[in-house]
Image (cartoon, rainbow, N blue to C red):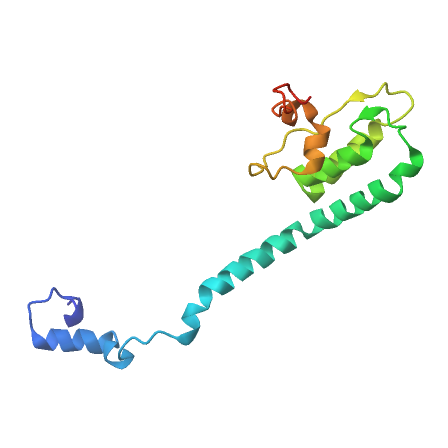
Length: 162
C-alpha cells in the first residue's frame, strides 16, 4: 500500500496537511536571509585568489631566484654562453611559461646540454599552453623570441623593428 503523502493529490485537505507535516514545512517559518549571505561571494573570490597564489608560489619563488641570479651573478661571467637564449634566460622563460616542475625539468635538461662538446646555437623553450593577454606578455618571453614578438612591431617610419 502506498503511503498517503506519496499518493497523487486529489485536493484533499488532509493530504495537504499530512504532506506539510512530514516534510516539516510547518517548522521552517518564513525564509530569512542570513546576514552572512552577502559576504559569501567576496569570500569565494578571496578563496580563489588565495588558492591561485598558493598554487603559483613555487613558480614565483623560482622566478625571483632566477631574476636575482641574472642581476647579481650573471654579469660577473659576461657573455660566455654557447646558446641563445642564455641558460639563465632559458630557465626563467621555461619556469614562467611551463610552471615550477616542468620548467625546472626543462632548465636542468638545458644545463645538461651545456658542455664543451656541444656546438650550441639557438635553443628556444618549447611552446606552452599559456595564453598571455594582449600587451601583458612577460618581458623574458619577448626578449627570448624576437622573431615572434618584435617582428609585429614597427618603428616610427613603418619599418619592422626586428
